[in-house]
Length: 386
Image (cartoon, rainbow, N blue to C red):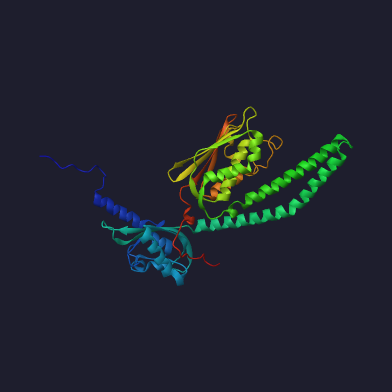
């Protein structure tokens, strides 16, 4: 007589696996997970709801979902707007301040999805939320620090540029009038004054540019990167001509990014390739892009002097230089600015190189805009007042 096959040792039946999954969801504390019916009433609860918002299951079930939204006088309107958005599009991103049971406020990142039956009829909504208050506070702190840095840079630029300009002009005037009329040491000291004041002026300007990167970011719009590259090449026309450089590119994508910052990014990276050219060959630069999953990976490949791979991360550090200013002029801020631009657009940047064989810079840009910049429900809640 044949016996029915038994489950492998420890294997769960489908009902047992479903029960285990429901138990895991219910007991999960790091994420608030719940469902809402078509009338906006809360229909399920997990431990994360109590951990994040302070409500027990009895206090939660059957209440209107608007009770967690701020400001209180617009909570129903805000909630209904989010439900409508999920109803119309299938999901809604909810990144805003919310209200705890005790009246305090917390910053949460949430996603709501519309639930439909096999016939496509709406039967409710499912939502998951995480507490991002600490991250939000850190972000606000960094924003405050960036603002302070920018203010310092403005002051430094204004207060230092004028005396530096005076020093440089005076040094140049003295050099023209008195070079050769004193001893060699005097001529050398005058050269130090002119070069030193000029370098300090460039350093102050680069510090200002570095500080202003994130504060100058504009709301992304659809941008053809080909056009941004061509604009950068126009700015570099003289340097490209003098070095007899060749710059080519593949078709580049249209993305929602800041146009001005993209021009600056291309300009800095191509200028870097022209500056660090190999003495035995004309500079050759090629720009390309490839979509990989949710990002575009852009590359700028040159045939310059390259560098040892161990320095790949150091080159993006502000004021970090692999060569002396006498060998290659500059302040060492250009690539640091590139990194801030790419990070502000939601991407990352890195370099691969071989000494004497050239360098390829890679940077990523998201296919879709950053979540905080996507279209969200039209009504949003302000941050809590201190």
